[in-house]
Figure (cartoon, rainbow, N blue to C red):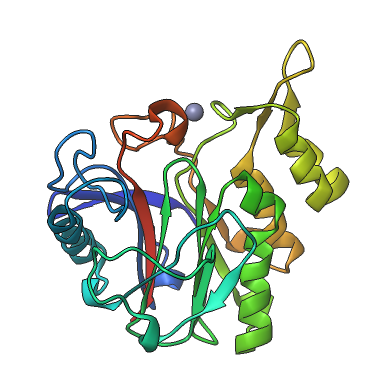
Length: 270
Ligand SMILES: [Zn+2]
């Protein structure tokens, strides 16, 4: 299963085109295809980045039209780099696509068709989950703190414990995010990963010459968490695109700081 770049109505995004995902509408946004001016140009989906709400709303309408989701059924969270996962439904749908999320969480889960789970990233790793048998979906935002807090595994656990999913049925898509090519860290990040994954973190940590800095593979570490939670390796699609390498296509918090827009990943049962 691969995550493939798509183009629809002038909007560029990534999605799993494998037929197993056909019961969902889903996608990972790029910065292309929206209406926002610089420095948010053009597909800014972040509600609190200083962009005009009317632009954010129009961008959501365009992105949702391209992906096949409902812009008037968005459920968002207030992301706090945690391991917190929330079960949500119709009652949690935002009043406006441009409204910011209120509830602290970094993972959302639902079994309600028509509810569009929406998470945000600008280097962090976006993860979408789908159980085609139980018809349950989840979306998670994994920065290094969320990765260390096992957010990916917690999202799977919520699907299993709260909705009766079998982890062996769950499909996972790990979207565009910062790659090991660009994610240079001090010891705090490797230490955080080791605290969660133990020795299994080592393949994702590479010391740089001098021994004080490291490069870290967050996508790989999240795939490992998914496997530890029972997701089959062949059910995990991993997008190799690095947000910090391709500034024409993505925003990167690491490279651009706060003068940037925000990408979104979304999934809805159809
Ligand atoms: Zn890179």
